[in-house]
Each structure stands twice: as structure tokens, then as C-alpha cells.
Length: 409
Image (cartoon, rainbow, N blue to C red):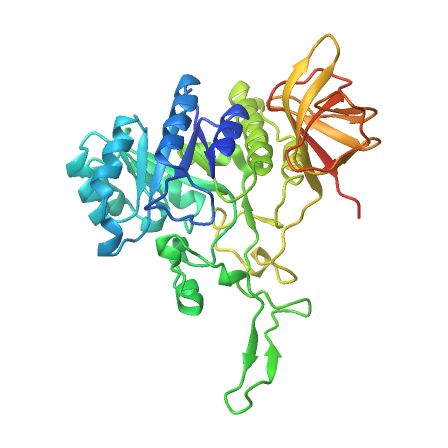
């Protein structure tokens, strides 16, 4: 049975390496131009080349987003840019605009093109339109149900792949094609600069009573009328596979490397467990519990099981739930001394109880009994960002393992 692809977001080079280490089959990333995530650090061409090398050495893929809705001035330099990407052997580019697709096709005809969710593809005829232009993967609109997706995949040619988002933040606008940010702040979401006005707290003003603000209530708890819960489909892996989806896409290029590692690790374990024994597959609640240890909002299944109701919205706050801090990244480990070299990511103290986890293995809990700085001096706290420290580990660890600490209430 051919496995589906687990596709991870990569906001920078560290997140790319983290995603692949923790089980992603591929990553999608944005360069300095033509992508929809200006808020992420994004990649220079040199970093893209390094990322592709890292991925390809491990048998993984890299897709580059060129998915803005471009104006004429936004097209400048596209031919040169995609030529360089092709020379680097990028696996595909993700595009939403037909004009951009046309330029890419005539500049580098053998560079695979995937059609972005921004294209709002919801029907068979549109998929076949792109298929007849040479496209072999489309990212469906998020507004389709599993039943609708299954009906599509049954009719499609065997070499046309369907990719869908299965986890992450949900845009209140149809397939992300939003004008609210541009209208309110001058920042164009369709050109990569969304200000997230759907997360704002709104009030109503009556024109003859300026300065009097009336809260907009959907219930007695609050006013976040466009603030969607996060999508989470980890409990429904068999349903997604049976619907014919070939690539499971995780949202989050502006999220932390800790978030990427945590979410990818859980989905990797769930997917692998399904393929080990499809008939006897049972969902393990631990996978969801682990995901909840990364920052998140409450979860929804989006449109997969029908149109979302009022239960898919968060009315009390636009903030994330953060129960744990990423405090350290393992750089090296000495088996004889059981000492790990760790890069600090948040303050750690001697006496802290921490959890340590890595790809494809369960976490363990231990107390930090002793800690040393780079010079070998014993220290009580690691307060400096990315400070290098040595920590005695009760169990073996590996490079890229993560140390997290539960937040105090």
C-alpha cells in the first residue's frame, strides 16, 4: 500500500530540519519573493539550496510557495527566480495564479507545479482543467467535506494527486481569499501580508452616536465573531486516507520549530500505526495529548464532516493555549558520561522537572539535578537566549531531541 505524504511547514532552515527529523515526508517553504507568508523569516536562495540538499539526502521533498495573487509589478524577476529553483532541483512550486503558472511553464517547462488552496478548487472540471495543462497535484479548497473529496478522487486520473490541509489555523475567508486585512490596514493578505483582522475584538458604532461603542456579542462570553478554532484531523487518519487524499498538509510556517516537531511527530506516529495494521487500527489518545502540548486554539474538524456550526468558533479570546515551554534543544550526547550538550530556548533552572522527547519515541520525565556552562562551571540557571549548557540525562538522548517544561499556572 502506497503511503500518503505528510507535508510540513518550514518557516526557516531550522524548522525545515526539525520537520524532516521528526517525520515529515516533505516540506513547503517560501522564498524572499512571491509567497504568502511575509511574517515568517522565509528563505534566501542559498538557504533554499541548503534545505533541498538536507531533504534530498534523506529522501524527502521540498516545495516552494509562489502563491501570491500578483499584480503586474509583482511578476518582476519571476523567470530568473524559478530558473534558479529548477537548477537547485526543487521538487515543485505551489502556485495560485494562472498568469504566474504560464510564466513558469514556458520558462522551466519540466518544473512540476502544484495548485494552491488559494485557487479555491472545489470541483472535478476545475481539477481536470489544470490536469490538461500538465498539473499533477492540486491543494483543494478547505470548504469541501470528506464525502465530496472522495467523490472527486474516484473520478480523477490515477496520476492526479489531491492535497488537503489537515491541521492548523483556519482562515475565516473562503480559501484564504480575504480583503479584510487590505481594507483595514493596507496590508494585502493575497500578496503575503495579512494582519489577521479576523482575530480582532470588534464593537458596533451607531452613526449618530460617534464614540459610543457597543460590544458585538455572539454569546455572553465574548466578541471574537470571526475567530475560528484550529483544524485538527489526527483522530480521523483512516477517513482521510480512504477519501483518496495523497498529501496531508500541516499549516504553520510562522509557528515555532517546537510546534512543528510536536505536531509532525504525532501525525507521523498515527499514520505509521495505521499502515502497520489498517484493519486493526485504533487511535491513541496520547497523540492528541502531545499535540496539545504545543501552542494551539481549541480544535475543530472544519468542513470535513459538514459545514461548521457556531461550535467551530472561539468567542472568548484570540490567544493561543500554551501549556508548555520549549526550554532546550539537544545538540550532542555523550553515552559514557550521560551528559547532553543543550542549546537553551527558554530559562531552565536546576530543580526543574522537564519532559524530553524525540522523533518516533515516547517522552520521559526527569529533574534537572545538575547543569554546567560551556566552561564546565556548575550553574543554577540558564538565563541567556541560546546559551549552551551541559545537563546530566537519566536516559539516552539524541541530537535534535527537545526538552520542554510545563508552565506554572
